[in-house]
Length: 395
Ligand code: NAD
Ligand code: MG
Image (cartoon, rainbow, N blue to C red; front, side):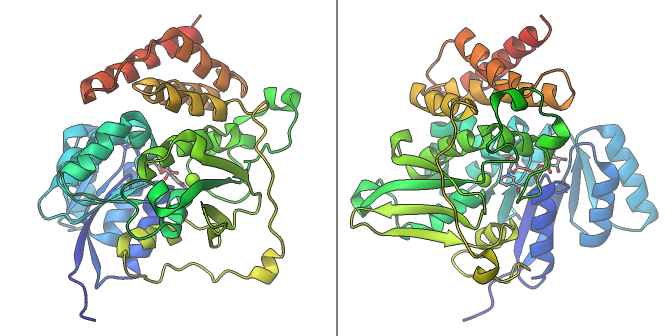
């Protein structure tokens, strides 16, 4: 087969856990990928180091003062990376005509507008930023099909399901004989903990995930099982599934990344070591396969695979997310916004661990569900939910 044309990649959130794993995979294939842009929020030193190593055409930071600092350092080092700042610059590097692939790896709602810009420009979009899809579900998927974007899920569970589904799964799950999506969950660092122990769980305990090393926000989400709730919503949109068609299966080894059950009794699973470079490489090269730097799976070392149901009484976030998906409209955006505020408050020591679910439920009860008819409505629901959450924290 002929060598593929070298693809230009923008990495949104380049300094994060997913961002650096993406750069690791890309650096293994310099003939296939070159970097158009790398973006970061406040971590200017980390972005400088990445610019030295990867020489992107553009680097983007949040604030202009940080951007000026980076411009000066790059000038001294005679690196001709252009430096820009602010939310509009994120949108520009996501939709630029010279870009083929956009890795969406900003954490939280801040990733929504640049990710949508990439979708609307018809890019290949590698979606790690689940919050963007959770907030804007129908609008996002509609934009994907309207603008001919190629959406590849990077979240390991969704990447696994994607790999286990028929190549062409449009038209709904039922017409391909799919009966259920089995979404695996590690159970997080607090699996099996009592309600009492959970009430005094600390941020450092929550961020010490048994199998995956990740950013702090998603680590807390994994500990509350809100991550699995957000993933349930994400799976509904990506695969056109109803919440009842998705079963959460706690699988502490994190070797099976998810499964698809079919009407003839077949269950197809995707396995691998817990290393995000596998789904990232899959998304980059699809439909081809490339080397990702991931060690071969040693099944004798794994030795056994365990499964159990999720404890929804101790971890109410999973139920709250399922209910938000069933409520529809702006409910998932409200859930996500309240959770982002709650997680930040927990990490800052202003809210206890079990207070996260409590705060999300309170904000849900205080906000009415609107039809998510346009982006402005979604962004307003997000803003009002944050205000309500902060009001409750300040009470
Ligand atoms: P992280 O905290 O390690 O990195 C986040 C990146 O986004 C950083 O580059 C940061 O500079 C940037 N960023 C943060 N706030 C920003 C803002 N307001 N504006 C612009 N940029 C901002 O997070 P992560 O663990 O890499 O996760 C990134 C996304 O991928 C999340 O949505 C997460 O849910 C998803 N995800 C992560 C993993 C994982 O293994 N880490 C797995 C599946 C999905
Ligand atoms: Mg996941």
